[in-house]
Image (tube, rainbow, N blue to C red; front, side, top):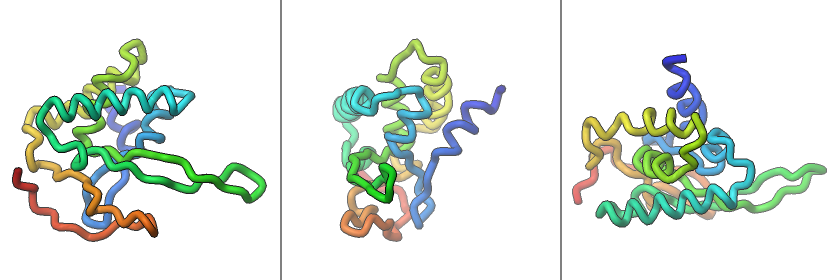
Length: 147
């Protein structure tokens, strides 16, 4: 059980072509037990506000995207999602429902980076990392960002 939070959150982690890690807010919402994504969007919005208040650029940590999902019978529809850096996930956990045990585990999991300090350590996923029209990830520099 000690590694349970790591396994749960690592399973939904994604990597860009340049090996930058990020998470889908929709997948994170399901993992945290939110049955209605609209409720989780409120949590993400609070995390975005916290990011602004911390002096960080939100565009380096929260990237809005659209995706096509299958709804059965061969049909599909467009859904909105937000891609999150590790720092964004940490802020989301800080603003999620504290009565959920998985949220406490998430705070512990994503909070690990705070021991090292965030600035430039992980590099943020930005709009430049995502080519929206074809939903493919571009190779970007892995050097830490200078602010």
